[in-house]
Amino acid sequence: MATITNLERAIDPPALNREGNIVSGTELWWLNTSSKASPVEAEALLSALNSGNPYGWMVPGVDTHPDNGGIYATSFSVERMSKWTVKFQVTVNLTNEINEINQNRRAIDAEAIYSYTNVDTLIEVDIDPIVNRAIAASNGEAYFPKVQRKGVDKRIVITRNERKYDPRRAIQYEVKLNKTEMQIQGRSYPARSLLLESWTGDLAIDNDGSEYFVVKYSLLYDQGGHFITLIDAASGRDKVGRYPQVNGYGNKPFKLGRDEAGDGEYMRRADQENPTLFYTRSFYVHEEIDMRFLRL
Image (tube, rainbow, N blue to C red):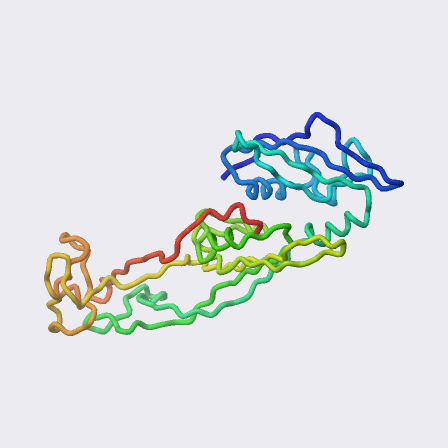
């Protein structure tokens, strides 16, 4: 993930215009990142900076200009330089007009809204979680279909106002798992514990007629991880071509062994009838993607 290696104002003073008591204009900044990043990713790095940051970056609508008292940043735009993929030109919009500052604060810089709700699930169970023993018949044969129990995941919905929304980018992230650890409201979520269900945007118009998007991120949190666990059993040939030799050739799952013969071969009958010798295999069914640039 790219980080900020340098962020500074351009040498030229800000270009300010005065009409009566209202001052407005722009100021140029230069941004360098540690590795290649898109303008959207660079914008996310700047948006994550707080007041008192070491670069003197003005949080829009919050910090005043150090050389021009009473002047605030209201918004900014990022442009990647054509020859240097790690260098960006940032244009910051400035004004001392309190109404414009408040409008931008309401529309773009309003605090995100977080909601947490429960989602009921059904989980197939292979092992008794209290005694840590296989759920199976007395002869060791697994039940089919499996036993199920109720589970609960947590749905996290984050709503915030953003200047842009690109459905083409959103669909690249939807129905994927977080590849790395994530932070949401100061809480850590391990890799592959969050599934981005949807990332939507609704166009809205601010009081001054400018457009913005009400963006919603919906994530499903599973503290155990978003994977499935299946019994390591089969009813057809094993990897060496043998059929199960337990209770005939019925169409039921029989356990595959992890003895000296290795995975994928049927256990001997005595092991089949031992409920404690119960093996499972876990699989991920969703792709993963780096979500650290999302404004969560």
